[in-house]
Image: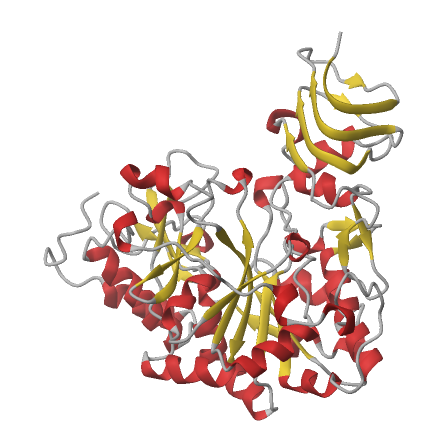
Length: 487
């Protein structure tokens, strides 16, 4: 596809704009889509070469900027007590969870946040109970919102009926916009009359900004006295409102703060934080030229990655949004797919998306803080889910989920054979006898079919191999720093 010949043929953006207006998409989101679509037409690649950025050094650390002993959200405190003398600042904060994902990569069809996360409770149970705990303990009605997509809205709102104390579910929702898929051959709106809903796609969580602005939620929060919005993914139960970070962020005067964690060899393929022309910038794998991959993957050079926990000053956000017509000028992410994912013969399309964290470059004076891995425990794979279900994590009194206090102090890296454990149903089947112990496990790699039980204890680095098609019932016992091969 040659997307660089912008002058060929009539301007096709009005076709997109008309379709979006007919669907009720707000004007800020339409302008945001126009920005990404014009970049597509102009042939902009979004590549960030190594010579254009500098490594990030000397970032403040969470344990340095807050006093752990008096921070009620600290794992050192391990308590549900909140500081009454400081709880008033919670009136100036709101929590928003990004809740648009379906978890289709794990075989799910509903909202990913409704998947059981721990002890029979879903991600959304933990989110709701955490917010209610803050409200009940402090007496402060801390504001709470969910950014839902059209795919997750109905199931999520129905689930929230279980928590009437949170308020009317509709009032908690910020609806993510939808944008048309782009026909890869014509760069016109994609057409699929037999299933018109497939002509649309979500625009990525960078849509948070025009969604807040265009829905009126940004102005509503500001009128209610909210100055700070804390945003994190719904599948990251480590990303909770931290009173110490909130206090420090308010005092700092920064308009935007990103929580980052230190990269390890396991994070080499993921994006990283850098500096460009004096500002912090995110560089994802898709933005790195092939010849620069060596530097991109050097975790000693580029030391930090985005946890997608961000703190935003809402007055600063409104100012920047109004300067740009209600959206932020974020780099476009182009995903080439089939119009109907289940039909290999359907036309190729481009889904234009943006990422929330890329906004760090849009704010003068934006910053980052290095946080412990306990604040980053997302579930992207069934391996992550197995770790979460195991004794490697425990539930605190204030409904946080964090690494077990008597464990090895780091999340186990679980790599499961996708052919046998790629879907949640497959994982549940192999755990029908119970969940193994992983609290002292550094890494677990499983190749081939196995059935596990609670008296399987993994310590250090363990690899299991079964070349047979028949599941192996793993014998009880301790497996420590070893490779175990089924016979």
